[in-house]
Image (cartoon, rainbow, N blue to C red; front, side):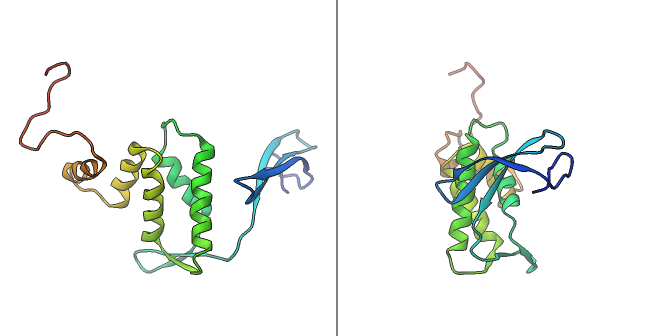
Length: 164
């Protein structure tokens, strides 16, 4: 495997172990040329998946893009990266085992929202606001109402901090 630091093709595996509940292999590698250390993951790919965008365009499924969606929504949130990786792997396994090769982008978005809802409410709201294309504060209030957020009614002014 090519070293990401010096581009040398001569890297060595120092450690291999199962990861992600046995569906991947984690390998620690070292480059003898520059001394760089890095980790790679090997996963089984059951079939090539394609995403059908809202525009009708068909693009190859990108696992890294799915992971980035979680990372953006969870930025600065106290969630263990392993938990995120398990969620991403779970969604990919679900898509691969569905028997469908073409997956609607909306379906993937729904799966991400479900995973985030069980993980972190703030990340869920962040993702939903983009995914559902929120246009005004009422959209946020409606979503927070679904989550059981305690918002004052629209005709009632919120209390100032420390005022009861």
